[in-house]
Length: 104
Image 1 (tube, one colour):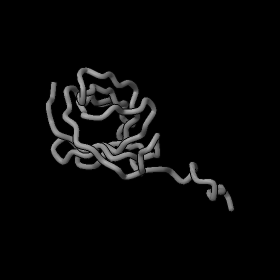
Image 2 (spheres, one colour; image 1 turned 30 degrees about the vertical axis):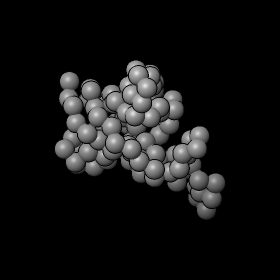
Image 3 (cartoon, helix red, strand yellow; image 1 turned 120 degrees about the vertical axis):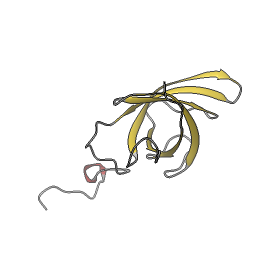
Image 4 (cartoon, helix red, strand yellow; image 1 turned 180 degrees about the horizontal axis):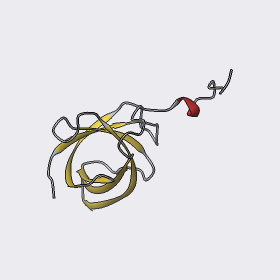
């Protein structure tokens, strides 16, 4: 169990959320494949985030929300699956853009 403050920055838009919007969270569990966090706001399943923590990693990690449960008013617990080390950690990749044409 590792408890550390991290910042989640929204990587892709969701309901009423804007890319780059961020929130502070506290971890309750960390592994190479994921991180569990406590947060004050509900996280949408499938939402993509960049996870920032200078104490845990040298570079931000990209993650996808796998689940989120309400524990009490204003307190949620969520599981975020992280991209494997070495995978692209940018907000989006070129292949996702309509104007990206391979070979042109």
